[in-house]
Image (cartoon, rainbow, N blue to C red):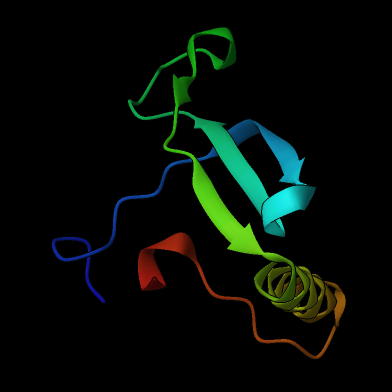
Length: 83
């Protein structure tokens, strides 16, 4: 992907999670930087995403897989412009 059609990136500063055991759900709410130069203390509060336990486990596994790729010396590193 070129510079012109690259996806917008919103760095996550922090997040909260809340379990709702009676419904079997987890609420995930990120706070992120939405503008260049925005300070972390002024982070934008994102929407509240609701995940089932199975979805949360799948997300954890995918994050672990991505971390493993980054830490693997054989992994071909891509620049953010390639996204």
